[in-house]
Amino acid sequence: MSAAWAAVAIVGLATIAIKSSGALLIHGRELPERLGGVIALLAPAMLAALVVTNTFGGDHSLELDPRAAGLAAAAVPLALRAPLLVVVITAAATAAVVRAV
Amino acid sequence: MRFVTQYRSGIRLALPLAVAVLAFGISFGVLARDAGMGSLAPFVMSTTTFAGSAQFAVASVLSTGGGLAAACVAAILLNARYAPIGMSVADALSPGRVRRLLEAQLVVDESWALSNRGGGRFDRRILIGAGAVLYVAWVGGTALGIVGGKLIGDPNDLGLDAAFPALFLALLVGQIRSRQAALAAVVGATIALATIPFTKPGIPLIAACVACLVGWRRR
Image 1: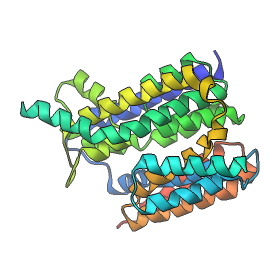
Image 2: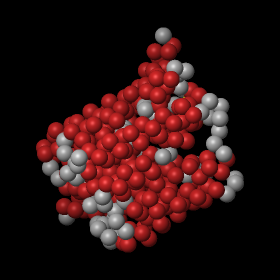
Image 3: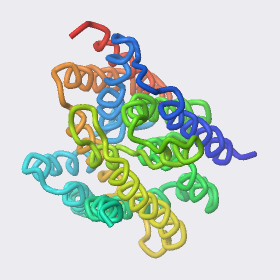
Image 4: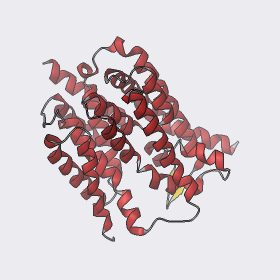
């Protein structure tokens, strides 16, 4: 089996299990307060790391390339609470232009 | 009729997001094929995993030689948030066990956020209406990206590589609802930045999870 199919199977089964766990486990039960507090912060921590790795991540190095220009430009529509689509199109268009120049 | 109306309002609420999800489905299809995942595997992944950031993480880790283990761990850690998210909507889902499990698969960040009625309450019909629209957009987009990928050429020429961090930033901004969340984001970003030069791709994402320990302190 290729790495791609292995990833599809492992990630797919794990995700279905994760998404099902709440529906199966919970009926008026709550996580211990501290554990719940930790898990709730996984999303901001991981998303912030994804922003960084997708902007500056290279092969064992930090890179400064058109992706950073795209992200910087995206901050403007984001600050103006523009729709998600506008935010990502701004980033893509900016990076495309910077790369083409 | 009222029930039907509520499903419809979930669909209507999700439509603008569905356009973005469709575009990202297309770019996932393109990127995954570019990453050497083939044609069928990315499609099957979208139908079963239905979680954009995790799927992009898998494609990007595999394409940069990060390895299967790092790809799976990064994706699973990314999706770990669906455990608490799933628990938060559990009471709103249908009572039947099978239906419940199917409905739980439609929970993604956007459908979850749209169905939030405040005070820990969620509207099941909006969750399902919105989740179904987003599912169709994501799977359909993936198929289009896989089939039509060649037509739009190199995704990087279109700046699609910059669209990913912008998407994650937009989703991140929506997650910052407390001082602790902001702190976790800053610490996570710092850890990722510090570990990128010294580790395989994928590892910085895993290391950044340590940041969520700032939630250990009682509020």
